[in-house]
Image (cartoon, rainbow over all chains, first blue to last red; front, side, top):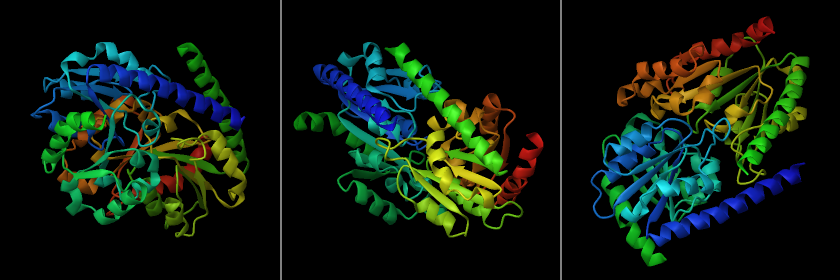
Length: 226
Length: 226
């Protein structure tokens, strides 16, 4: 029973990877660099995206919003006059806990790939499953809020291990928390020493310039690595 | 393809419910009331559990800790001299994102059911999948931290809808946030008007007496409802 289940899961992940490669080819054909943006619920993905794409210098940005239900995040991004497409995962069953390559594939016809250089896919808020499903992205960025505690890299290692950049958000709250930043960075080093990290506050704007610049330079960097 | 997938998922949920009922019968046989405690990563489940079971008046409490990896939470609870059992979900594949009835079933032989009145099962930090899998519990409690924003009941409706009690945690940070408590409660009412709610701060201890009392009275209340 257990072995059957593992095989079903492995088959599903293989199928997902095949579709993710097809997505990646579609994105490459239009020279669109793709970011898979992930975090726990309420860590600040949408706020940090609003901060970065409003006034970004260089690439033309599009956004794909994944949510179980609703379009409040997409509405926030659309108000910045950025092309945004919404995927709701709830037709799955009680609500899929992640985007998979097939959901993103189904959204590709609605994406203006010829008119953008950079696509940010905002995943469902979850630190487990999204890490297991490639969707055709070039890089993975995650947001970890200091309010979530220092132990998160150790408790959700796959998510932290799989990211090129960790945005450490809500640093305006550090004076009011027992959060030990050195211990968090030590835990992050233990699972992913090569991850870049930027300290930010979506609320006050501290550090947001660094995140916006990182994103603005990404298409050129991705091209030079390709 | 999609229809096949939905049927596989429905079959899996049916199988889970059958095992959950068997768990419930085992718990009932020993008159153990069971709480399924859920939240997003870092919302404060373990801290609120430490606060409640240390010095609880009445029921003898046991804890079952679910985590993708590690036993840091179980170690924290064990230091309070409460019987605690750890389930790690990572043998699944990249790490299961929830406890299911079968994982809990596999832990039952290790639980001292004859020596406790109340079992708290701390689920994996996740606002989506745990809501879909009954594990044999009598009641569901979730923690929602004010740092996560007011929109969470609307974005993760199944989780909020399925709980008898919502612990609204980290209220010590309210002066430093833009969080609108009335709007959060309005959103909670929209998906689950009958949910009880207690404002708490695991950090300062504010409101923790109310949560501890709720938990202490639970076995009697569950018996009167049975």
